[in-house]
Length: 303
Image (tube, rainbow, N blue to C red):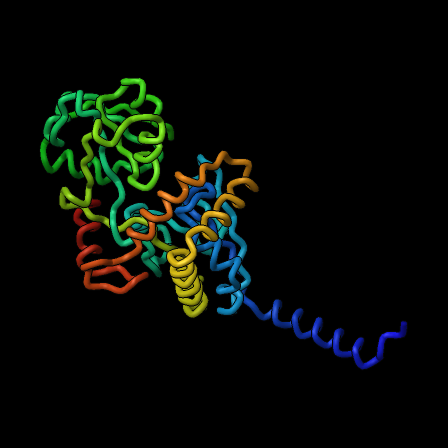
């Protein structure tokens, strides 16, 4: 069967237009601060649903290793945009690193301390003299600020990234994220009724967490690109809130591609908690924005 010449011309023209369109899109390498999990579902969806493409962006999501320094990845030019804890980004800026905060994804702190009720730790003041497990990966700023403010002297035990030491009784209490390690402890057979929980947000330290950063020079060159990335990402999170099963399917696919173990129930818990943290709630600020009050709070913590 002969294919009409007009059809071939139209096909070639369409391919040519698509190639031009792809070339015109701004190429962005985005690196989240951790390995694939539901904490980053909004980014996966923004890519999969074409929100980045519609915003004129050609985005590649490149996860780091478990030991990577996310700020170093940005400053070394290995990524155009990274997600990082707000407090980490601000400390890097204090050190003189030329990075720019341009969006605030998570509005609330999910950091908490957990202890077994049988330990007798009924308040954070009861931590005095006890073993407190704290991650070695830089999530200790708020914990130390809280301990210093309340003049609580604890025995610090550095932990890499598991809850095993807590489960085995090697520490009396441990810092965890509500959307992640807390649920891991519960999934390991510890009933929530057996635990005491102390949220940093309930102790006057409701510091926002995941923020978006780029180099100052990149932002000055084309702020519209960075803002477009943030807006498309928020659309991805909105889609995730309304299509949770699809979001988990996508998360699990990314985890499998990275050869990571995955648990749909745990990832569902994480997704729902992260969606709660994205919502400003009563804060006088819109999604993706950083309030002056929160900026002042973080400044007071790192001073």
